[in-house]
Image (cartoon, rainbow, N blue to C red; front, side, top):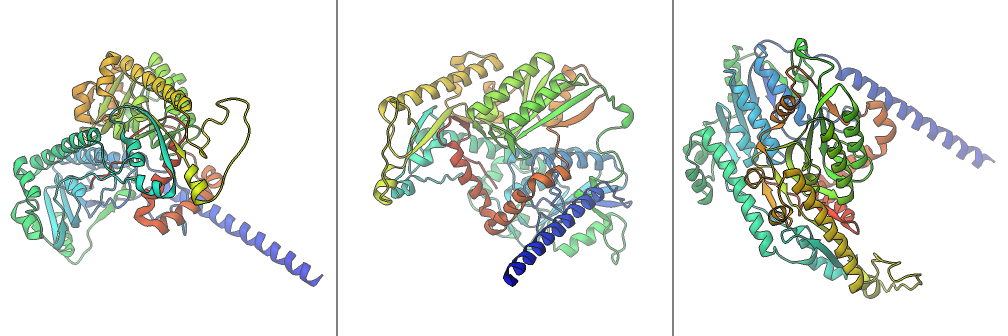
Length: 591
């Protein structure tokens, strides 16, 4: 009996502790939410301090765990929407005297960097200064920093200027050792998403397309730096190709930077520029805090008409069925958002912001249908981010107009399926065998314990062929081209935004603001209010459903570090199995 009461007491204490901890977290969320609404005061003669040491998503996440122990960081990781808005606001804010670009790594696609870079170029029109400093310049950060009036490097720092490269990891050898065969059904000569599972090196077709778009992106990179630093583009190419930039002194000698300085010298310079005494601190405001300053971040309230709205629907991440979140596209979530803006009489036009490598063919088609229906009611314009390829292009192709950045990755019009045959793994490696009965020839189609029969493979190939025909027909109708022409530029081939413009897959090169202006013009709007969809869930909503996911993600990220991206890629491979996919051949990361 004594032992019984001991266990009962321990259980009661445990439940009480869980309740107390949960209640404390809830109070923390409420406090954090309340604190986030508090306006931040900005001193006169302030510097806007910008440092990108995190992955930049399309929208700032509404994450109630950021300011709590064990979850997230002490500051918010701003989304591209708030970054662009803040830079635009700083342009006309008399309290802001300039921008300090501090050491950053730009862990995002090049189109995102392009949008921020263009916002900084616009900021410079105000006559205010931009200063950049880093101990380590990655190529991505240098491309951004090159727009600064002054670019400084630590005297013992690192300056990367070597050109772009692309590497693919091939898994066939590992699969062979495990006794797993990847059974591939695809359409598209260039649809190389399946190559890592069936080859040990790049196919000639894939090498051709990667060479093409990588050179195009590198050319744009060099052109931007050439204009900003007033150095001939071919000269820049030769610097990189000959390995000329090895030491900080080399970067200074060849005028890629303006000086070699330590951080204390930079701070003294900033004090001088803002009229501060050397003994005083620099008056500065962090970008995260600046978003909460009291000046309106977008437009003059007098110019806003509440009944005239342009909706921005954010579609970011891999495409799958069901619900999504800030970093994934759920067909149900995006469809609901499109239906809502379509039936809202206050919304006069829609901008669909797409940043996606694709995913499920079925989920992509569900979203495409909603885009088509919306187009019949009001203008819908697509703005492409870092990637809008395969399924990401499919959901875009029906829009009235498509905008892309020059270095957006798009196209990849193709479709595939992968079905693993694990018979050798089960039989030879594990000693596991299977037996059973079935009522028909195809009743166990998709069984991974055996290889496909020729008839089964023919059925699946027919399914994929039908999907490709649907894809190319949708693109042909949306782009007002023949299906034969779309097939000729399709076949799974990847293009940059600039290349896509030349072959008719996009209408204009431009950023999300250009897309908004186009939407306003098509809807005959001069004054309007911007509204964002899907609506982000509140802190309390997220608390109920997201605690376990946040805990799991936090500890996995802490354990894997930079390898977390590889972990996510491995998880996505499982989603490719069995169902037809419209997705990019691989993730493209250039630094």
